[in-house]
Every structure is written in C-alpha cells, then in structure tokens.
Amino acid sequence: MSISDLLFEFTDWLRGTSLTELSLAINELSLSLWIQTHFWAIPTIQTVHILSIGALFGSAMMISLRVLGVTGMSRTMAQTTHRYIPWIWWALVLLAISGLLLIIGEPVRELINPIFWIKMVLIIVAVIATLAFNGAVKRRAAKWDAGAATGGLRLAAILLLILWCAVMFGGRWIAYAPV
Image 1 (tube, helix red, strand yellow):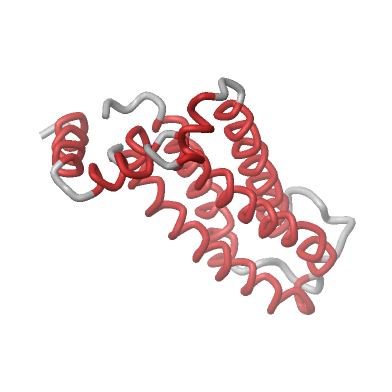
Image 2: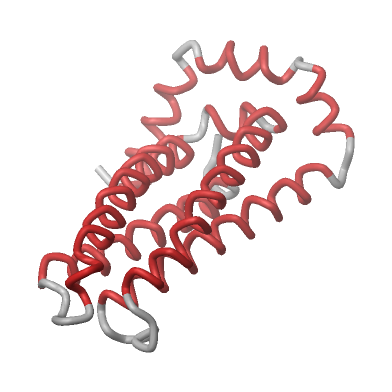
C-alpha cells in the first residue's frame, strides 16, 4: 500500500466521522461566513500564520545553532535563550490564533484533511520537544560557556529543527491534499 493509498484511506475514514458534521456546523458560523466572504481575510490570516512560523523557526534555529556552536558564540547561552525563547512562545500564541481562524474560515478543507491531522500531531510533538529542549538548555546555561554541548543535546537541536521543518512542510501540504 502506497502513501497515497494510506492518505486516501485516512481521508475516507475522516469523512465517516462526526468531523464532517462539525465542519459543516462551523462553516455556518457568522465568523466563518465573514472570513469566507471577505476575499482578503484568508490571505491575511495565512500571512500572519506564515510570519509566525518564520519567527518561531528562526528563533528555534538560533538557539539550536548556538547549541551546535555554529553561530552566536559572542553571547552566552543564557543571553541567547533570554533573547529567543520569548519569540518562540509569542509566535506560538499567534500561530494558535491564526490557525484557529484558518480552521474557522475553511473548516472542511482543514478538518477533513489527513495532512492537517498529521500536522497537528507533529505540532504537539514539536511543542513538547521544544519545551524539553529549552528547559535542558536553560538548566545547563550556567555551565554552558565553560564546555561544549553534550552529544544528546546536539542531536536534540538537530532533531528539533527537522521536526519544525516537518510541521512547515505539513502546513504547505494541507493546501494540496485532496479532501
């Protein structure tokens, strides 16, 4: 069975769940109708969503690259985390708000889409991993500048970047998955 077949089966299963009725109910909400009838709303919300993931990914990348010793060596690890972690969490807030508005604006396209659900799982994993990673980096920040990062933390930095790339890939793929 190919990936296309699995995605088709997943979509078919989603159509048989109560998500279909939920999507149709959301579609009738006044906010959903407003978003649908104002041609600039979806592109504006998507722009905020994309800029937010850019801010989140850029901040996560700067911390990860500092962990890897590639850049930011003129700052201490504490300074680096103090600078970028707030960007990560504010970007997550904007991502959640804009993502919710995108779901409300196009509920069937989102909720009956297997890629959307794969992305949601990836986001949950990425947020938990980011919390754990940032916690580990902050705990070691005081000792950080005296020595190099552990191999496990370096691997985590790389995996975290790959995970956020997968989230971004999933976000783009939503638009092209058949519903």
